[in-house]
Amino acid sequence: MGLVNRIINIAILVLALASVFFSYLLFSKREKLVDGWKQMAQAINGAARNLDANSDTKSAAILDPAKLGHKTYDDMVKALPELDKQSKAIAAQRDALAEGMKDLASSLEIPADAKELSSVKTFAAKKEELTAKAAKVQQRDNGLIAEVVSSAKKINVNIDPSELKDVDTFKAPLNKFNTQVENIKKRIDSYGSHIAKVSGVIGASTPDLKSDSYQKSLDAAINDFQNYKNTFEQTKRQLADERSKLKTAQGDISAKDSELSKLKSEIEDKEKKIEDLKKIAGLGGEAGSNVQIVRSGDIEALKMIKGKVIDIDPKWGFVVVDVGSKNKVKQTVGKLVNEIEAPLPVDKDMVVARASNDKEEYVGKIKIVKVYDNCAIANVLSSAKGSEVQVGDMVFFNDEDLKAEAPKAPAAKEEKAE
Image 1 (cartoon, rainbow, N blue to C red):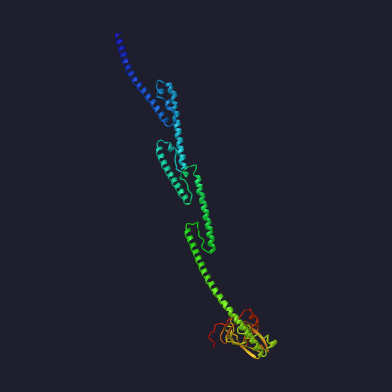
Image 2: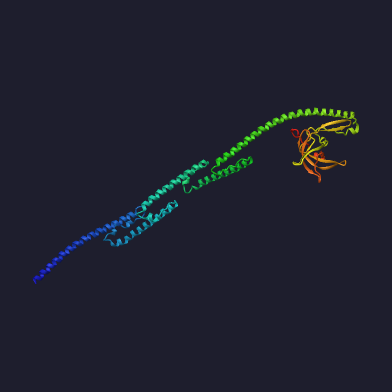
């Protein structure tokens, strides 16, 4: 029995020692659990404070470490959902900001991905990239604004750059600028139209003001205008010269009029003497008053020309007549014979006739082409049916042919035909 008690005591002692050992271990674990719980509460509170920063929220007050301790389990259960609520709100805000940045980038024509902007790993790099591109867009806009302001100033339109930078007021100065540009365009088109009309009036080349080479076109038009002006000035000088000549001619005409008056007086004296000569020649009285004295160059002198065909060239179809530039005709006036110079004219038609049974038979017509001193060459124009021009045929002028026009002066004398 004593042995059993000893064994039992020893077993109890071993168990007591094991209980002490395990109690120590349990106490050590409890201390670590309590410390870990405390750190977890502080971490949750720290996360809440970070989420509250600049967020206008107060989740950290709800997630107070005192309410998250192991002794206040019920308060912890009530407070912990606030962390989930706050984290979801921050995540939604992050995603909305990423989408907003993407939309903003798209409005600036900058490609962007919302996932890269919401990702913790790629956000910083994408943010730097978007910031750099946005800076370039701003630089471009400022450059455009500066150019618009400069261009507007060149056409007398003053624009404040701040008005163009303001998203609410930029349209008004741009409309003013566009209106002035439109007015200038209309003015240029009007200039071009009027320049084209002026060019057309004076026959100058029409400048193309819409092409890049408008300066050359204008230079060409100006050159044409200058030539026109030079021609005009030359014409003015010539007109002045002609007026001077006209004035001189008018003086000469006055002198000639005076001379003509003298000649008229002399003619009257000559006519009076002719009348006296007519009476002396036995042509006085009523019959003598109708006699017309023929003078050289009169058509009547040509009517008195009578000639003959003296040679024919059948090969070339021309004939030779015995009348030339020194031909003379005679007019009998009463008892006097008036000898008149009647040179044969060129380019005149003559009638060819042949004496037959005391009658003159029509043969044809010839045209005088060359006149010599005592003969002339003529082409045969026509012949009567069954008749040909022959040597010995008579030639003379027809009244109708002479009435058509005044006779031309005889051609310049050539060497006499052999």
